[in-house]
Length: 173
Image: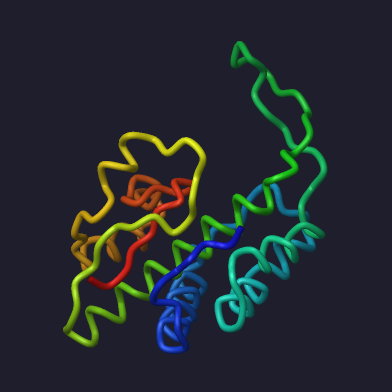
């Protein structure tokens, strides 16, 4: 099921593309190790294409053909590596997380530039068993400048609220 991104309109999509280009220019676009070499080559243009005209679900379907079948993982005791199957949902996890990240970044940039509107956290995807910490965030206000800065930083983006794979996103209040 695709994320329901309330403010995903042509203007926000333009800001998403700008944020993707920002990462490309800085050499900081995230390329999953689960992508094939061909996947890593086509990923930036696919991401831009679906940001312009699609959604995370369509993006995930397209990424399926570019996912590796196997990956290396640390052995349970942490010494050495083993080869294991890439999870069948890896394409969905990647597409949803990155699409939502660029949507949030685009919306933050838009709110900052337009100098109007506040952002709040909401549930963009229903989940069967929501985590209490995610539930507690619903309706919480978000500082657009601070969130944008955090999401632009490759070291801190995974510490941002909302977290990847939470089903949470942001919208204008």
